[in-house]
Image (cartoon, rainbow, N blue to C red; front, side):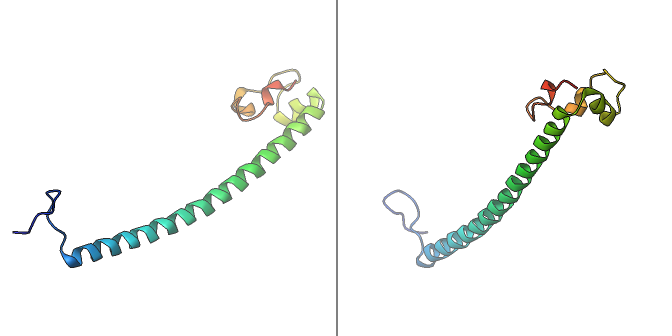
Length: 101
């Protein structure tokens, strides 16, 4: 059977270390390529979120500057009714719940 090293592990065969090193290099290259792909995807998602936040801000500005009557008409509600929570979205997304309409 194989000889043992000082640590009690079987000694690596001469070709085994080279194969292991090459396998690790290839794995590293695959991981670096995947990382670059994920970074590019992340940038696209960040740009999309930024654009959506700008649109939400523009809509909020429009709704805040509109009279309550017009806001109710836009939302399809009778005058004076509050919009349902689902129209406003979650409270953390924007300040919609602070609006008068």
